[in-house]
Amino acid sequence: METKLQETAVVRSSVKTVILASMIGTAVLSLLTFGVAFVARPVGSFLFGHFGDSLGRKKTLVLSMLVMGGATIAIGFLPGYHSVGVWGALLLCACRFVQGIGLGGEWSGAVLVATENAPADKRALYGAFPEVGAPLGFFLCNGLFFVLEKLLTPQQMLAFGWRVPFLVSAVLVVIGLYVRHHLQETPLFQMAQENDTTTKTPLKELFSCYWKDIVKGTFIMGGTYAMFYTLTTWSLAYATTALGFSHSEMLLFLMGAIVEFAVLIMTTSMLADKVGRKKVLLTATVGLVGFSLVFPYFLSGQHNVLGMFLFLSVGFVIMGTLYGPVGAVLPELFPTKVRYSGAGITYNLAAVVGAAVAPSVTTWLIARFGLHAAGLYMFVLAVASVIAWLTTKETKDVDYTK
Image (cartoon, helix red, strand yellow):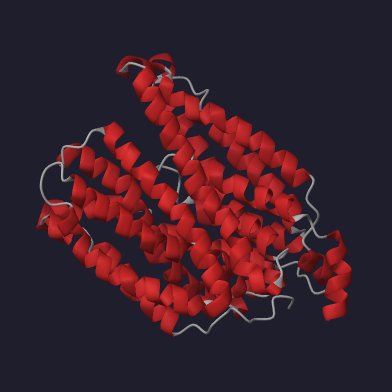
């Protein structure tokens, strides 16, 4: 088996190409608004998962970029309400739905290109590069909005300024398509093709044999998603409407925290390669349980700069630790023949469970019970994540060639 893998690896893509190809898509993803159609994401993971496991990672990853990137750019060209009335809103919903379809196949393809090209002892590190694309895109998007808000009037922002990030994403899409076009198919999928161990019905096999791993992976990741959108989407809205922070102040806070996020993704992924995924992620998940109960106290008082700093800095330490190694963990739960489907469906179901309603539920909890209840939804998902990890074996040393 080792000799066979070495022979197949001669067509392995270069490290730089793999890193850029896997990271560029998640950077585009961060240019999407929170309103991306979460319902469409599992649909996309079903669709692209089927082709990724039956036809190959490279072709499917290129197609997901075309779908997702095209819809993102199209938003920048949408006519406004004054031009087409309610059709403008309907077109926006359609674009977001298509974004969700593309996004549903993007993450799993990106992490498989990374991890299936990785040395066995560096899978978490390679899997971290698609993950670090998210804070990169988030940083660029928020930085661009910060600059636009300084240069344009509120009327100009409403008229055309909001379109700029979507149109600028065209640059990332073109770069991503170029790099991915020059990728080789991953050596593990090539090996599966040569050994005739691929399947024409990956979804059927996935749900008949690996449904327990889907459930575990969904809850392993669910709390992480809830935390990310609480730290970003919800905190931005709440701080600017209830805590007296300006939009520009919060963008600067978030941009600084996002740098910390990116650093933690890389460092904890390297740690997960050394000591194991379970030790790192279970520890961070226990930290999330505690954080979900105490973070409302950081946000007490008007314009509490120190409290906001602690909320974001502590939060993103935990968030980075949770998010980085997941790029290796979810694919490691599944064999090669259903890995694209399994990792993608798990990841996107977690998005529905953890993120689709997190900001709105958090807002409702505060309105009903007060600020101290803001973390209850996250707390429930964090406890579920702990349970999921306690019932999951270490994946660091699984045979990834199978």
